[in-house]
Amino acid sequence: MGLLSKKDSKLIVDPLTDNNPITIQVLGICSALAITAQLKPSIVMAVSVLFVMGVGNVVISLMRNIIPSKIRIIVQLIVVATLVIIVDQVLKAYSYALSKELSVFIGLIITNCIIMGRFEAFALGNGPWRSFLDGIGNALGYGVILIIVGFFRELLGSGTLFGFKVLGDPVEKTGLYAMGYENNGFMVLPPMALIVVGLIIWVQRSRNKALIED
Amino acid sequence: MGLKQSLHNFKVKHQDKKWLPAFSALFTFLYTPNETTHGGTHIKAADDLKRTMNTVIIALVPCLIFGIFNAGYQHYLALGEIEASNGFLGSTFWTLDNFWLGALTVLPLVVVSYGVGLAVEFVFAIIKGHEVEEGYLVTGMLVPLIVPVDIPLWMLAVAVIFGVVIGKEVFGGTGMNILNPALTIRAFLFFAYPTWMSGDKVWVHGAVERAGTPDAISGETLLGAYAQNSTLAGIDYWDMFWGLIPGSVGETSKFLIVIGALFLIFSKIGSWRIILSTIIGALVMGLIFNGVVDAGWISNTSKFYGLMSVPFWQHLIIGSILFGAVYMATDPVTASQTNKGKWIYGFLIGFISIMIRVFNPAYPEGVFLAILLMNVFAPTIDHYVVQGNVKRRLKRLKVKTA
Image (cartoon, rainbow over all chains, first blue to last red; front, top):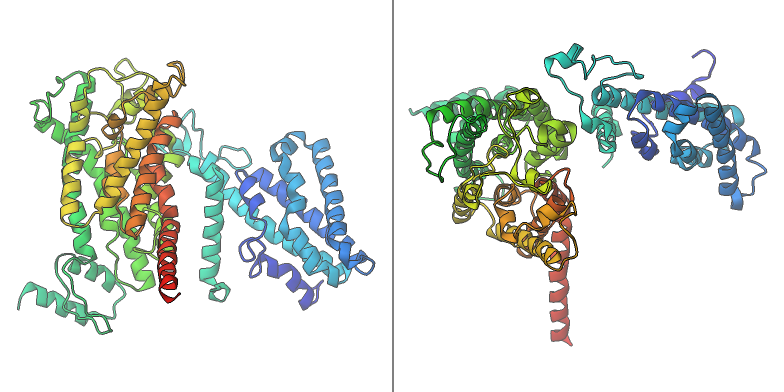
């Protein structure tokens, strides 16, 4: 990354790998379970969080010197809430079906611990540019896991990707289904999302033993 | 030099090879290894893990053999080709035709279960560099006995991989698992492929492929029928007890399960406390439901009426509560360890099993869910039993010193 200094690019790369908000810090699990049954909502969720975190971190960072520390949580909440409402309204205006599908979970971005965590831990103590990078990095790290989980859950659970029947038609028995393959109904249920996240954690930690904590 | 000695020499010669755990697994299956322990413990007992597992397998073999005959019997009976067998030794049950068809459908399940499961165990043993653990011996035998006879083999293979890896290996292998692996496999199958694990077709061989054709046959279990407020024609209590009813492969014959239970209790492998308390729990729940019906709190239009009005003792001979109590709940790894804990653990398994059975008409058999649930709670039960004991003894101490 020629654009960024080494220290700055670490802000983006770290959350994608060795400091991933989901698999290492184990934050934001609830939304990872709830909306990853299919790929499309996973991506929309990832993009929404990317927007909220990128902008939110900058806003908090700009205000960091004027926020009284006693009421900083309230201020942070107001910032997230504003941004989430924007996302929600945009989705409702341009993609109503999807917004129905994601239902309360867009609203619940407010409670996503990753966002508040980054505000507290980073934006309150760093300049706007670095806060922006940190927000983008963490949102990407979150989104990547969401998309991986969504990919496997939709592929194995419904046999589709983005709604396209990539494995054949289960009703007319074409493609894989002609050979007796069947969709794994367990994949669509939330517990399986937890197990898939667990498997990602397992793979990641057995590749990098330094991540294993006692 | 006997065979044992030459096998031992072979082992010493190749002791730094990666595949050695695979060899010693087969070697120690029948022989006691020559090594002695080097550490502090020198307690020697004949019933090591492998012997324990073998004992359970011996107790399961009658169920398997019966399951093979029953698979053929139910198929031909549903087709109308044979008369209903008159009792356990009826002339139409123990026939070569039944055995042949049953063997063709059931033995592949056994082969897949053992083949895939042991392959996973061997791979993990080689990766982790420890000896192959014996835990899968019993699991591999239980799995074919608790699935419907027509389950596709690839589904079974997927489920076995899932069950062994997620149910056992991630916790650290045999002896460390929280959940019973065989039931984890069944739970996976049930939630992943519900159409193959429940309903009115899968329980008799051939019913699925004949569905919708003029040759269609019913493959419903008694529990399924009861849950629909109806019953199956031509089945009396003795048929249920002998096991001449459709169901999972090995769980139908209550007679053979009782024999297996006695064998396990007398060989001190299975805990009689768990078996007994599970049965008591089931009976108590059955009695409560009977009481509800007798008191007139629900009418026969209620969707729970069919199962609630079943006399309480009959709950033991329909469905798989006995099989679960004898072979699953007693798993020493996942059950409670303390004696008082075993009573509580077993009682709740029986109690919850019947509750799920009655309250979930979509899925009449709740035994496996109840056992899995109590597996999770077993350490908690033990904790409170031990703490209670500690507290009582401390109190006694105080009284003395005061």
